[in-house]
Length: 441
Ligand SMILES: Nc1ncnc2c1ncn2[C@@H]1O[C@H](COP(=O)(O)OP(=O)(O)OP(=O)(O)O)[C@@H](O)[C@H]1O
Ligand SMILES: [Mg+2]
Image: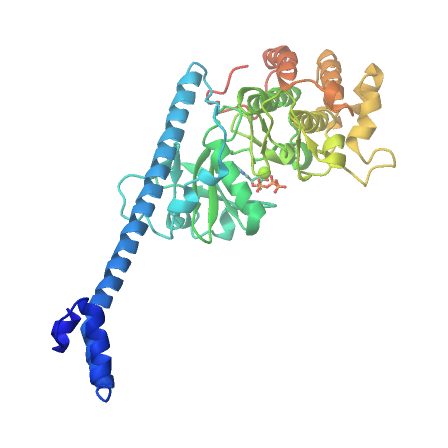
């Protein structure tokens, strides 16, 4: 080819001969000739480059497609697992997660929910039954996140009361804390609450996630927190309502510990995370710190100590060893608050009475002392027999040794007859009006 194009005589081997001949015969024209030569071979080099780049693009595309297919295959597998777990649990009124929770699989951070990004859609987006909201929809629901709609402030951000477009009242929690902890809390709430459904756990209606905003939309609980009614409200909760709340909370933790696989440890069970509906039935909220326990009963996991002072089990606070029994301890503290009307830590009280558990523990098994401990707001309106039993349960729950604490199932079984009797016997709370169907004991 080269020989012919340079006009040199052909001879074997043509390429080599042509090259040599050209250089020997026409040195002065070497530059020129070589220049010409370059012009001639350049298209074939470009062709080579084009072929190589096209080939690389095809290879890259193929790799990309394979990755995409593998991902789809994986998510289809996960969905099938959910369907299986759903059918396993359909016999019960509760749906309990049977699969390992994969915190990296939350689609909210992949799909996103950009400001107004889903405007004009006809069908609301859903992820495992919870709705994916746009920031704009929530902006409208809360009248522009107006100060007037703020119903609470927690460690993770502001909570607004909002009215969704279908007329549902909702509590909209806007997480302000950027960084790992806030992100983790958001994902856990979405992942857990979209899988765990119980009349004793607060319901997640939806969420919104984009690069800047993280919002959780919960059912609105009109009577706010147990904390408010026990420690701030002037109209105290009556004895029967307290027993019912104690049972509802015990059932909530029982669901997490004993029905979910793997078990879920709430890690932040306390009065502000117990919300009350219009009938003063309780639902447990705030799963942002929740941790998946070991599959083994009471299996330990080591973790950073998070939670709220006054509610932390001693072994968890000192070593970070977390089990479902850490929640049982926190539950015991709430039970003591229901009995005594005292907060877990109160430095305004006389020495020796600052820490509720330390003050209460030696008195709980003494009949006379127990009566002295009762919340003065009850003004003697309680059953002494029930009180002694509840005190005994509380004493076991806050036992310094985790192994001596009961399982939540045992607590539930002990409380059922007490709550049933008190609701039959008591005239009921003056608040118990506009009753809606509430969970049965
Ligand atoms: N679903 C809800 N319905 C009604 N009010 C709610 C709801 N969720 C939260 N609130 C209100 O918002 C307040 C703040 O809640 P949030 O869970 O953010 O913080 P917290 O539990 O009070 O404190 P912490 O951050 O220490 O857990 C609550 O105290 C309660 O008054
Ligand atoms: Mg809370």
